Amino acid sequence: MNSTIKYSAIVSLFLITLLVNIFVPDAANRPDQPKLVFNIIMAIFFAAILGFFIYGHIMGKQSKQRVQTVMDLSVIFGMFFFLWLVIVGKLGFLDPLRYPSPNTVFDVYRSDFQLLVVRSTSDTIWRLVEGYVVATILAIPLGLFVGRHTKIHDRVAYPVAKMVAPIPPIIFVPYAIELLPNIDLAVKFVIFIGAFWPIYVNTVYGVRNLDYRYIEAANTLGASERRLYTKVLLPGSLPSIYAGLFIGLVLAFIVLAVAEGIGGSHDIPGLGWYVLYFADLFYYDKIIAAILLIGFVVVIWTAISDRMQDRLLKWQKKGAW
Amino acid sequence: MAREGLIFYGSIAIFPLIVLLNLALPDAANRPDQPKEVFNGALLLFFTLLLIYVTYGYHFKKQPHVRVKTVVNVSLIFGVFLLLWLVLVGKLGYLRPHSFPSPNNVFQVFITDIDFLTYESSKASIIRAFTGYILALVLGIPLGVWGGSNLRAFSVSYPIAKVTAHIPPVVYLPYAIAVFPSINGAIVFMIFIGAFWPIVINTMFGVYNIDKRLIEFARILGADEKRILFKVVLPAAMPSILAGSLIGLVLSFVLLTAGEMVGAHTGLGFYLMYYFDVGYFDKVVAAILLISFWVFFWITFGFDIVQSKLLRWQRRIG
Image (cartoon, rainbow over all chains, first blue to last red; front, side):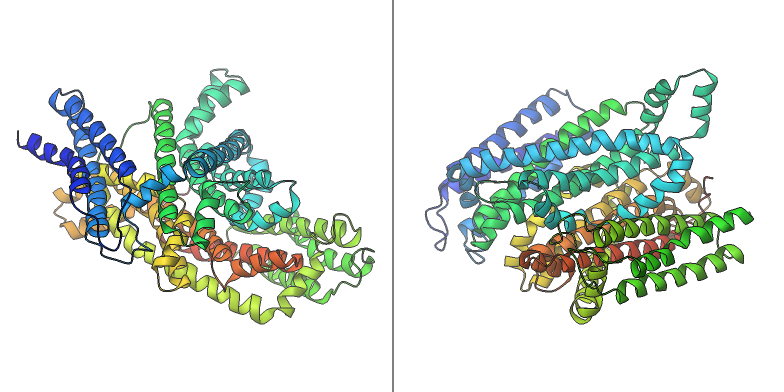
């Protein structure tokens, strides 16, 4: 019962933020904040967490630990928005130019809807998907092949990877822009380079650290080379491949932001370009809005890849401690 | 064994061969009068170092055989790359001279710009990178140990860390420049953030995945919490911590270059971007080579040595 009261307080945090925003007057140094979008988003958060709370805790459809994790996360996000709104937006602390109120920031999604939410986001996601997927498709088979053939690995692949892999892919951005026919292609190419090496290196590592007895057992049982790859090497190295995919994604995002910032324009928009372009013009509300949007894209992307990971790695034992 | 020695010495002979080719073949018509001293000198210096290393390591058997082999193979690949670059671009004159300078011209930049590029920019960049990186290590490892040993903290901070770690720290940079008093501080902050997450996540994961029986054994044997932390938890999580630290180190160099290309007025990334805008591609390539060299240097000579010291207990899988 005690936890129900505690969780109810947490759930209502978003509702409180919403009510404070409506009824408390704006700070004198940030007058007339457009409140609509922020209020809608707080209401969505409130509804989603209320739904989860009722479904998971009261009806008991979720594990206790999961409910607790979601509640802890809600406290952190709820307190973040609440404190931001009260300290900056309502009490008017801090410099208004550099620290805009959440109302102003979220209103950017409405006022800049076409450029920021539609064109920049879709172009960025599209570039990321293309560069990253091509890197994955090439790196995993190549990594499996090189990991399987010790001679090729020792003579050529390992020295090359050792030398090239740690080079920051960003330094190729100017060259890629100079050499490739258009900037879109240059950005994708650099994303590809950035994501390729971590995925490849981790695949090779996964295959080479595979217990050799598995391969021998498969050979003894008469597995063909194709079956060996698909049934032993690939599943066996998946945990390591996933680590590589994670690092590859981080690098792809970094490279993407810089490459877009250097090469982008109003005709070639992207989230990275958006941030760096409006930084030059000192629109800090737009910068923060874009950073939050990138975070949102990341959340969705991570959620999808986690689902896939759980499904593919069902056989792996979870940590005990 | 003797045959292997011949292969080693033969492989590194590619460097004097390049020097000879450079002196013997005439320069390409579209890239006339290349200054050859610096490139040749660098190659000969590198060759001498390799020769000493192979003699010392292989001949007198002072280094593990595998390591000598790796060093020779890496150098050979590097040598082939330089050879192709010199012959195709510098001597036969393929590709556009504007965006593909000959290696002779590129290496010359290291001497003509010795103050600005080789010394000042390198110094500024390395100090920035390591300030951010060391801050991340000092804060990230203790925090990761705490997060990994506490189930509730783990299940809350893991999703947050996963999301935050994915947001490219570069996008914080414009905001950091606005909030921090100096651009230098903003870049260091960004490097710190970038290196911090992989270190925290991997430490957390390493500590979380420790076999629980190890800790129970230690407790049964009467170890107090401090001893358990230093003698059991940290060593057992060390492979994971080091994996995270390596990713953090690579990321801090990526972010360093990114930050300098976008915002700074000193450092190697700034140098690269500045001369790209002006269109001096020999300087751009020189900066790319120098950045790659520093990254390679710190990872190979800094990180790998620390790692082999810290993980000496781990049985190497042959």
